Length: 123
Image (cartoon, rainbow, N blue to C red; front, top):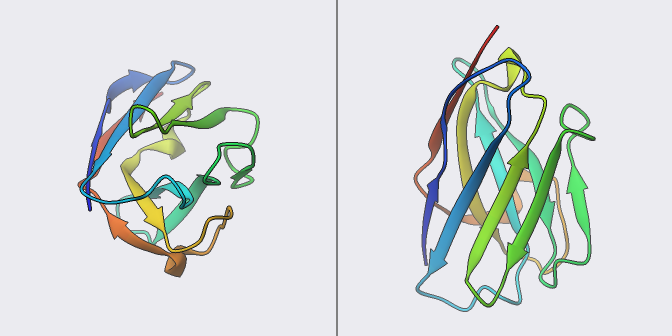
């Protein structure tokens, strides 16, 4: 399975960005997907996850109401719409495939990872 995240960049506080992740090389439409980020000097943390159908989503408290995860199984693509960005959202964002079909905030459930995309938010 290959995952390629894109859409990162440098923005100002309050701006928006949309990340995309193209997934290929495997049957992932029956599996949950997620976005995970790693800020400088910090551990990776799950930002959001979405179940295999796109019917159920889960968000970390620190992004609730600001970020929206979605997927298009016909295009094999995962998205993360990020609004009202804050400097503390600065991190490398990774897309990942879970070993479960249900949403999960457990980092150890994600077994396939792509290269990350850097998001930098300045105040």
